[in-house]
Length: 203
Image (tube, rainbow, N blue to C red; front, side, top):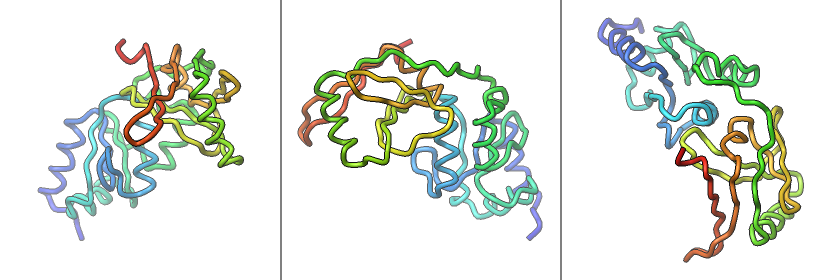
């Protein structure tokens, strides 16, 4: 179906009025496809604020953006009015460092941070790692200083740090935000929970 003038104008307004906008399935908080989720994860790690548009909420835009961009798939990332591409291209640009320049953020140095893992946290993390011997421990700190600790495969370009006998891998941007972090365990109504104290979060 040809792209009608009204839909074309709406898409153009969205792109022109937002320095960074991602047309995706779902929302930033709740992506509805794996490719959208991967793109959001990369962007979250680099910049605190950007706009998303849920194409599932608007069938006209969902089909129209493909004709507008001459790009057949979703998600689609635009930066300063320029189509960057979909998930695969965003991942490649991130790995090469080119995405940092396009977003106007400095590429982080690949330097392992100094962090502290308490005795209680080290014991809990080691127990968790024993349940998944083929995975490694990751610490993720995004541009909004939201934290995540998880087990998963090692990824290219990560840096590794050891504290209290526990090895942790971080992407370079997370590594910069993790300087001086303390990982501990506290008791909650639902049982033990990891806590991360980050002195950089208020900076």
